[in-house]
Image 1 (cartoon, rainbow, N blue to C red):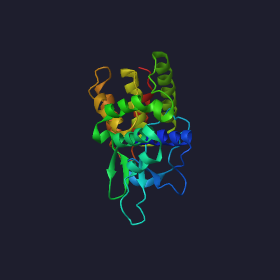
Image 2: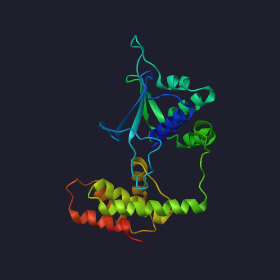
Image 3: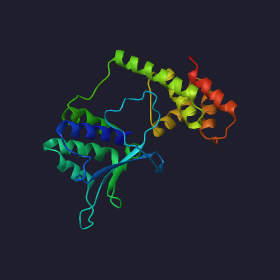
Image 4: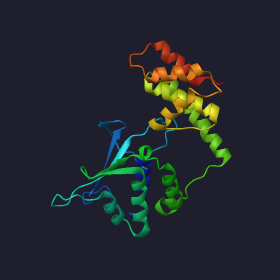
Length: 240
């Protein structure tokens, strides 16, 4: 998820300052792939896209930089830093640096926020630099706003759960919905949802069989018996 946010911040900063990051003269480029399946490409999200409250997983976005005319490696973060004036370029480059790994063989950097386990540092950087990067302070939700967002996300996830026949969507949505009920919070992203699933098996507020059943579906082939999907779906949509 870090690279998606970094991409949207960069896009908006470019829009705000008039820096062209899509033109032919720009050596930067983005590629968007399904998490765990680099061969499956998707359109790169835009900063003006509407927020999908039912989002479960995020794609992996890589920031690349074409080599120079001699074929020499060009660091995409240094190039990015020099594209923008003053501290803005430094802030944008550091946003990417904190949520990605540099791959010198491909002149690019890709999402690795989970693996590097530096989420707190990434969030601290956003709090310190969001106003500079996009002109908006890093938002801290009040209780009223948080409650409203959780309610909207629950309804969106329930709709996704009821309409889906995909094993992964069903077990992930169910796990997130149950977690929201017992912990009054929400998660997104493959890495985080799998951690939540492991926690559900030990959660004292719900039956042990709930976590076991959801995990069974998460490990099942796509041709799973419909009764298992139905059972997990009912667990996720239950009010208590």
